[in-house]
Image 1 (cartoon, rainbow, N blue to C red):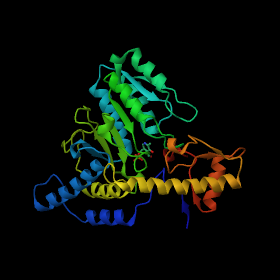
Image 2: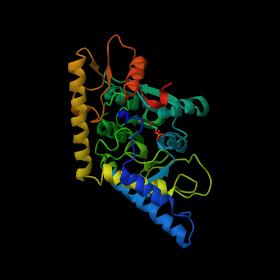
Image 3: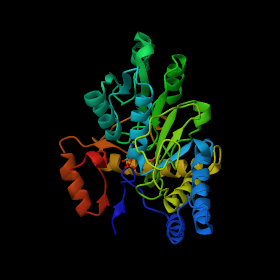
Image 4: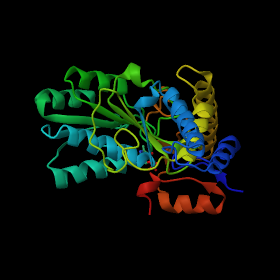
Length: 335
Ligand SMILES: Cc1ncc(COP(=O)(O)O)c(C=O)c1O
């Protein structure tokens, strides 16, 4: 039995979530249908949406359910950009996930976007002074600021409150990719005041292919998908079973804003992470921890190390043979 340590790529579904998912899959009915079975599916769908909303302090009407995290990020970045077509600059930190990098580069190649890559420091943290300069240079032409809440590879937490406050000063909408931070750090979207925030169910034990975009009531995005207008900014028959399972996973991992679920989970993850790091350091004293060495500045689940003189892919292969599932970087960039 492999020791599965690659939760940054995807996390196993706890039995409670799996049971909710399989039970919900037995419910026949399109949540948009008005007959009984349709309404049963609608109830499942909305219970999931409510739980996801509660986990980040949002109103259910602000949650757009998507087919995964990548779609949420694409909808936020392209949707905000298109809705503000006269502002062409996108401010984006240099260390981002490919869902963001490829979206902004596509907008630059096809839609005339101008990308302002904001430098990050040695720990992967955005340089707020550089962001401030980029905003102040000409705030009127900035379509949006987009940033990770926490880096999915090295675990560095971004100063999202300061970032949001800076952008708010210039009335520029902010999207945060909170996919790596979700289930590990407290998120309260109303307190933060951002326009959009992306989530994915499978990082917290929900199903793959199910995600959500928080869209503030005041935010306007142009949809990616056109059709039956089942949701604000997204068309397509809604996935009631996926939403129900996402909701159970969200309640289990996070609960509501201020609930003890998240704190207990984060403390447990940090204890396991620290034990792992102590063991590695005593066995391999020259191993180097990447990202922020201060536990308050990195995700509680993240241990990212380099081993001098050692090739990452070879190490990954040898660990796999020895029964340990790890990554050398983002799964979407592997291979
Ligand atoms: C930070 C971050 N953004 C975006 C994604 C993409 O999400 P998904 O795999 O659900 O499409 C991931 C996960 O792979 C991620 O870690």
